[in-house]
Length: 627
Image 1: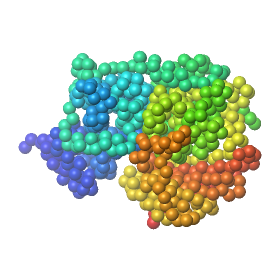
Image 2: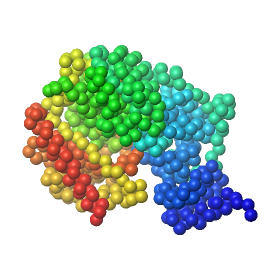
Image 3: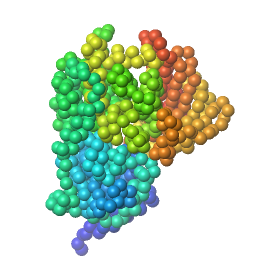
Image 4: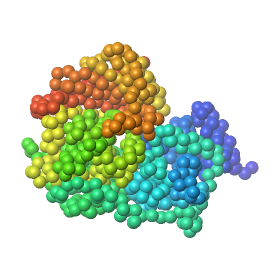
C-alpha cells in the first residue's frame, strides 16, 4: 500500500493530541488540514517526527500579538511564529485596514511602502508582503535593498503612501524577525488602531491569501522598486537637523551588521564630519550578527559595542557609536580625559540628557527657542530630561507611554510639529525634528558628533559635559533591570507580579516611603496616605492645556511608584512594565539628588542607593510571583 502525505498528517495529529494542549492542538489541526497552510505542512511534520513537543506547543499555543512595535518573535512554523503565512496575514490585514481608513478616498488603488533590514529571511518576507499587497490591488513600493526603519517612516509621508511595513525584529536575537506596521502619518500604529489591524489579521484565519509573483507584479507595475531618490531626500532631512558648526572629532562607528551603513556614515559625511572610522568587521550585512558578543545586536547593552570601543582606543577616538540592525537606536562609548584617559558607555538616559542639553543650548544661543517649544519623552525616561527642558523655559510632555509611536501621536496632533525641538526615550531612541515619525539613530549620531566636537574644542569631553548638567539639575542615577521570562509561564508570572503590586501597595520600598502610585493600565492615581484612587489627568499641551486626544485610548501594563526622598536622595521613582517586544519584564529605578550638589560626594552613594532600591523592588515583585 502506497504511503501518502495524508497518512503522515493523520499520524502527526494522533501523536500531537497526546502531547499538546487543546488550544495548540486546534491550531495544529487547522494548519495540517487547511489548504491555506499547505506550504507549512512539511515543517509541522518535521517537528512532530522529531518529537519536538515543546516547540510545537509554543508555536501553536497562541497567535503572535501586536506589541509595542508590531508583531515580533522567533522564526518558525505556526501562528505564534514569524513565517511567510503570519507575515502574509499581517500584510493583508494592514491593507484591509488601510483601505477602510484611506486618506485619499478618490484614489482607486493606494500604496504601501516596504522596507526590510539585514536579518535572516528579511528580504524574502518583504517580498511576500509585496506579493500580497499587489494581489490585493494596492501598489507595493519596496526598497531595492535593506534600509533603516526611520527611512521607511520618512518615505511613507514623502511618497504619500497609505501605510508602511518594516520587516525587522530591531535589536532582538538572530533567531527572531518581525513585522512593523505604519500608518499614513508615518508613525507606528497606536491604540486602538493596532487592535483594529489585529482583528483584520485574525479574520484571515483559515483563508487563502492571494499573492502575485514578485517579478510579475513588477512587470505589471503593481510592485515598484524604490531607492536612490528617497535616500537623498531622507539624508538631506536628517542633515538639516544639525545645529552646531564644530566638526573636529574622531568618530568610530559600527552598524553591528545592520542597516546603519546606509544612513549614519553618509549623514555624518554630508554634515561635514571627516574623521570617521567604520568597524569593517561589523560593516557587512549578517543576520547572525556573528561578531557581536552573544550575537545580541543591541546598543543598549555595553558589550555590543566592545569591538567599536576597542577600535576607538586604538585610533584615539573621542566617541564610538553603534546602531541596532534597523538603525533606529544609538549607543555610544565616550572618551573620558580625566583623571586618566579612559572610555566608558553612556546609558540611554545619559545620551538623552546630553542631546537634550545640546539641542536646547544651541537653539537658545541662536534665539531659536520660542514660548511654544516642546520636548517630548516617556514616563520611564529619566526625570532629568524634563528638568533640562524646563530650565530653558521649554514646555515638556514627559508622561508618554513607552514606545515612540506615542511621540509620533503628539507630532501628528500638533498644528505645528516644528514646535518639538527634541524627543527621546530611555531605550536609546532620539529624534530632533519631525521629518520622520520614529526614533532615528542617524539623527542621534549627528547630534552626538556635534556635542562631542563642541566638547573637544574646549579640551573637554562628554562626561564633563554631563557632570555640568548634573551640577545644575542634581545627580540622577537611572537604571533598568530586565528579567528574562520563560515563553511557557512568562505571562502568568507577569500577571502575578503586577496583580500583587496593584492589590498590595506597600507603604515602604527599600526603606523609602511610597507617596503615589500611578497605574497606566487603569489610568488611575493612588494616594497611599488618604488611601484614595482618582482618575489620571489626560496628557495636555503645555502651551494651552488642551488635551492631546490621540493619546486618550492608550493604556499599558505599567505601574509607577513615586517615593519620598531620604538624606542625600531628593526623590526616587520605580516602575515595572512587561516588554512589548521581547519575553522580558522590565524594572526601572530613578534616584536623584538636589541641584548644586557636590558630585564627588553624592555620586557613589546615589548609585548604591539606586541599585539597592531596584533590588528591593524586584524582590518584592518576585515575592508575589512565587506566592
